[in-house]
Image (cartoon, rainbow, N blue to C red):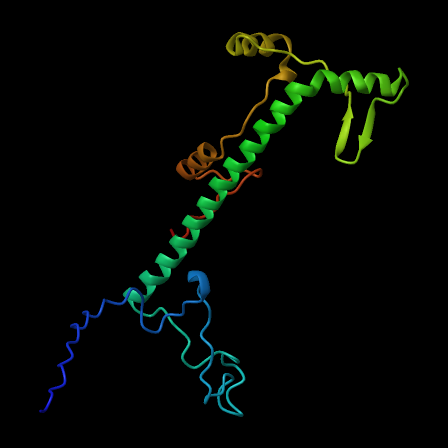
Length: 201
């Protein structure tokens, strides 16, 4: 009696996904762009006795964004890196605020006791602070200040009675517009010509 071997069934192969980046684009660990290593059979510095003015040490197959797709891929990597940086700054700001709240709570809870200890420690002497391993505790003299309840009234009063308290700010944009319109060329300023500037956004 002969037996027939079972026919093995194979699952159909999945369709190939479209590339997410140019085929020759470098992509290092963590999504960072790294220069591709030179091929094992080639000379990273070019042919022996080659042109000294060329890109010495650059691999022959270095990625060059010379098409719209490749340029767009580089812009995407830059935008992704900036987005990660923004997320890091946002998270660090949240962490810093949490530590600030903890510090404020501890100062509110123990502030009176810390002041009582410091007064006893200083004993009425000339010294006003005490340095410990984790920081400094002490007193400082705050200079005389003023709380302005009505800024407009205070400004009007200061113009006639205390002009040194009124600060004047130079509007550079308005000055540039005036010089551009009139063609004036005063000794104290000069126009910076408009120019095309490269940017990545």
